[in-house]
Image 1 (cartoon, rainbow, N blue to C red):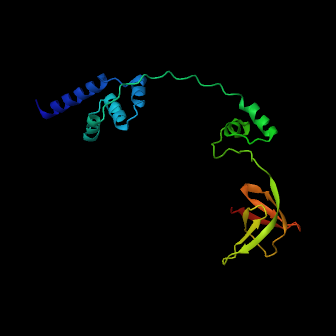
Image 2 (cartoon, helix red, strand yellow; image 1 turned 45 degrees about the horizontal axis):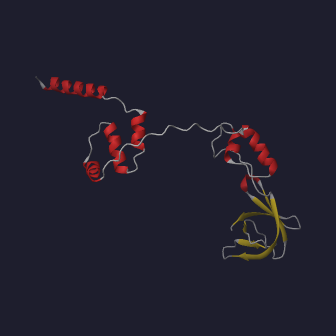
Image 3 (cartoon, rainbow, N blue to C red; image 1 turned 135 degrees about the vertical axis):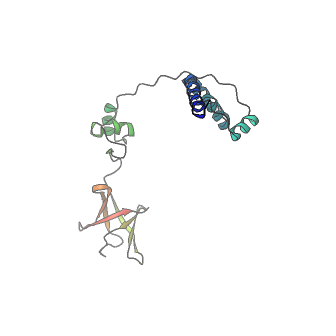
Length: 193
C-alpha cells in the first residue's frame, strides 16, 4: 500500500469513529454540572467529549475521587410574573422607586438595551439649602459645602457665591445640575460628596 492510500484509510477511520460517537445528552451534561470539585467536573466533561485526559487532569483525577453522580433535579416551573405594565403606574403613583423590570416593561423602552432605556428618576427634583462653606483651591476650582453636609463643585464660579447664601439645586438636562441663588443667578454644579 502506498502512503496516500494509508492516509485516506486513516482519515476514513477517524471520520467513522467520530460519526459513531454520539453527542452527550442533556442528562449527561447535567450530571457533570453538579459535580462540585472543578477537576472532577472537568474530567467528567472530558469523558463526555471522548477527549483523552491530559497529564494535569489525570493527576487530579487520581488524587481526587469522583463523587457519585447526583440525581438531577427536575426543573421547577417558572413563576408567572404579574403584569409589569400595571405594576409600574402603581409604583409611580405610590412614590416608590420604579424597579428595573417595570422600566423594561414600559412600552417607550421596547427594543432598547439596558444602557439605552430611560429610567424614571427616583428622588427629589430639587433641594433647598444654605451654603455653609465656600472654598477654592490653587487651580481656581470652587467647592461649596451645604448645611446638609453635601459638597458640590461649582463649574462656572464668578466669585459672587458666599457662605450663608440660600440656594436651590435642581436637576437639569443630560444628568447635570444647576444651583440657583436668591438673585436667580444659576451655576453649573457637580456633586463631589
